[in-house]
Image (cartoon, rainbow, N blue to C red; front, side, top):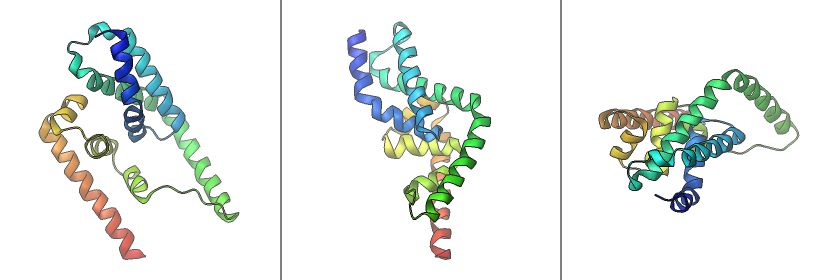
Length: 165
């Protein structure tokens, strides 16, 4: 695959890569950094790509690895930033401004990362079970289990929400 062809694959999948990184990382800036770093690495290592048809899958895997690297590096920072964000949200709610995020997104954030990533790849990015298994390096049965557990937890989140309201 030439660098020009790969550049087109990158351009076509930038939004997808960002959404995948968002399912692992919480902050937009970290997601952007992960995607940019992954693209840089992919261009440098393009000669290691075995089959052109797997270019996007390969790129997704690199993005996920970069996300995990950033998450490990910034784990302590996130705890501090999250508490600051909650404080700002509380302040903005008292002034009448409300930070809005979808209920589904909030429910997804309550899931374990492994389940959140699989749900994102399956429902949002519409990868097949086999493709997801190849991307995250687990058997297809594990992907099915994670999807099932994630669905159950989401269902439970929404059932609890409707019971209390």
